[in-house]
Image 1 (spheres, rainbow, N blue to C red):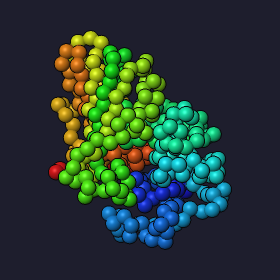
Image 2 (cartoon, one colour):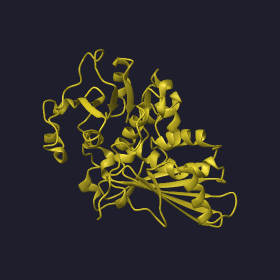
Image 3 (cartoon, rainbow, N blue to C red):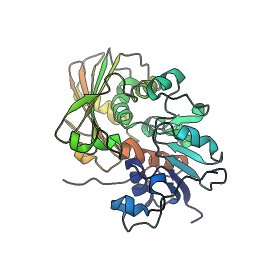
Length: 341
């Protein structure tokens, strides 16, 4: 087992942790040496995550009080916002970090405090924003990764080719919808699936925490100073994100011409698939794919982007980043095929 990547997972009992375990347990280069979940400590992973029943003898444990001697190559954090900030500094310096929360995504301290109600970490400058298809080369040499938010992943993959090629004139409007698993494993009044299953509503108008990371990243992709309107909605499904991105182009073009621009931009990105008309969240659920479709009428463009919020929007992208950090093919352990139907 000496050639395996030794992995510690902090926070393995939620939906994101469940997907990390589902992927990493069958990753040919991975060995999970620790998985924490304080409330589930002592229980077999398969007792908590029934889809993994009988597939592993791993047990959840409490996080060690002294982390200075933790023997691992990489630590994944699947904890609620605000917890990784206090734990990461306690780890040995040689352990690579991949954080799935928002603790290290935002560079501006005031913006971070506004959206997350937290003080920025002194370690912030050491983190690379882990949108794999955009920051692939930086990720390869990174020691610490801030994994993107799920809405941010779908939106940025949809918009980046337009911004990188300087094609947008004026305002961008994004209408994004998500399934109930995006709200986490613990039910709350407005997020519990029985409340959502026969309902449809918008939430967090102009205040969603993924907005600043989207605009921050777009400014690194191209000359981005556009007005940006981002609105999130609750879908009555368990998993999946569908983002509709509306913009006006500088010049009239055709759908075929714009599709070629997208094809060139993502020519080395296995997990981005260009589809006709519209993608469907059914075809990306449980996979690490992002399906994108572009449609143009004159100067008006709409880009549709669909991902699984727990895989490409969280755990899958995190493992994709781990693969790059350790010199592996980024597809390793991630060629996960969806189901039909």
